[in-house]
Amino acid sequence: MSEEIPYTKRYVYNLDPAILDSLKTLYFDSQTFEQRSYEDFIKRRGDEIVKSISDEKLSTSPVIVQPKPRINRDEINTALSNLKISKSEEYENKDESGKDDKGIDSDNESESDSESESESESNIEEKTLETISEATNTNISNDDYESTISFMSTKSPLVLFESRILNNLTKGKVFGVYKTTINAKDSPNYDALKMIREMSHNTDNPMPKDPKIAGMSAVFMLSSGHFAGAIISHLPHSTKGNKGSNEELQLQSVRLFAHKTFHRYTTRRKQGGSQSAMDDSKGKANSAGSTLRRYNEQALGKDVEGLMDEWKPLLDQCESIFIRGSGKGGKNARGIGLIIRDAKDPKAIIKHGDSRVKMIPFGTKRPTTMEIKRAWCELMYLKIVDMPEVERDLINKRMKRDEMLNKSKESKDNKNGLDEENIKLTNEIISLLKKSKAPGLVLFFKKNKSKLDVNFRLQPVEQYKATPTALHYASRKGLSYMVQTLLVQLHADASILNNQDKTAYEIALDKDTKYSFRLSRSLIGEDKVDWEKTHIGAPMTKEEVEEVKLQQRNKEEKEKAAELNQLKEQHENIVDEIRKEEAQKNKRVGSYSNLINGPGITKVTEEQKLSGLSDAQRMKVLREQRFRAIEARLNKGV
Image (cartoon, rainbow, N blue to C red; front, side, top):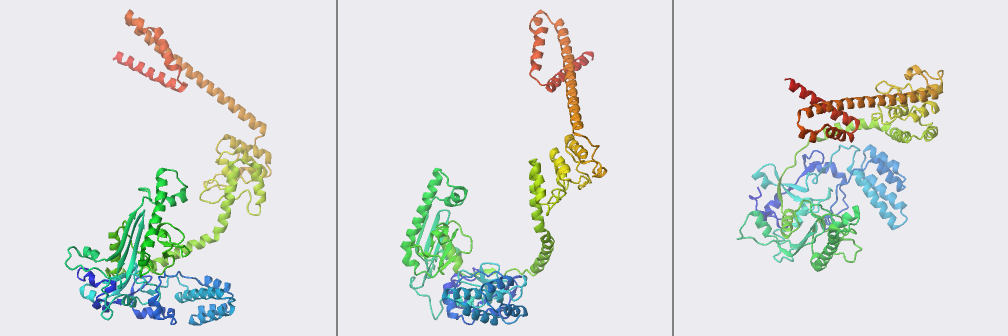
């Protein structure tokens, strides 16, 4: 399609008259991206038109303004109260009844004038009131799903124009120009088509043949130590007779007054990020590479500074300055901060806040002179693109999603404040239990008796299903001393069930913990608690517990000794069998064999093999030897 309309006719500074006359600005719904008419645009946003702003001021000092976020009425009322506006109630009533907002603007202005004590205060108040009035105009109702109509709502960085020339060639195609190229801003007072007509030369005002008189702009790119800059004339070269594709000819037509590229090693390979940023985040490294990168960053800054000084006469004449890079301008001397300096900096050539400065709104490759030409052609030629896709179901989907979120939020909001506090209390209880700080636990429950008791349900519930109380948790973790503290001193309820219908006693980790439950039962007494519900065993005194533990230790020692004796007997039996087998072998072997493999040598060898092993390992080795002996006997029998 672009081949059918030559690029020379689509140059923004010298548009073909037929194309320029055929352009018609397209307006879209900000929610569904559905095309709307100019009449719909005026009807929806007519109240925003400020008649006091002249068209001349718009065309001579355009400013890029991002779409303003919606401001709810609470924020508006707060701002008004801070300014001590006495008629805030009238303002709210007017806003709710849907009356004309012009009355609000006049009231606000009169109030700000009456309350101003100095010129600075009045200026601040007037700016604040203008912001508030714009917010109320753009938000006719406090409905999050209310859409606006604007030529900026294209779902792309382009402003779109309809043309009968394109309609004759194909349907569904429109012209597009980058918003940053024409200084577009989302305001009904801004006329995008008028801006293009003022930028483009025509028969009444033809393009000057002198490149300097035709105007100039600057393009700068900075990435990973690679810098490229150029001063470009608005008058392109003639490419008649040149060979190449349309894209190549388009690049050849770019007229450069000056251009410069250089590179400094400032970024670690395959890692990214400047060395200064790495130093700020992870500390200063002391390697040779990092030192070199720091030096090169300073050298890069000096190179850019020197180039800016050299190009200052040309930069002062530039109508636009396009920049592509990372970082922020102003005081931060990194990335584009090397190009855009703070206004107070005496070395600043391009100052922060300069209205000529515009960011390139698309991705670029490594900064080179050819890439600057490509970016210039992308910015300064009308593009032929498709219409944005309509998303009619988007609002319904958002409404359903938000309704579900609101329902879940409402149910959670009631518990959020309480849950957060309960989680903090739970964490403190768990910490005291793990550290077995019984006095601290008792003191904690006494201090927070207005908030919780000893049977407090641990939060969050999903995490503590099996151990819903402190007693359950202590029992499950085998904290026998803390179990006794909870039962005897804090009088915890041992009959509470967890999600598996088990009491704290039933989920005890070991016997010592269960003994602690039974000891606590004897200390508390049988009359004070319904012990059947707790499923705790018969009560035991401290002496009984110690006696049982002693008996258990003796029993375990006896069992261990018996097991060792059994292992020794098995070991001796296996050794005897091996000795007998070796003796039988020696009888069948000659005298020479007896000297080498006699029973004495074999006996010592087997004992040496088994002496360094543990009981279990020794049993395993002997068991294998016994199996081999049985296998040998069976083979002989066969």
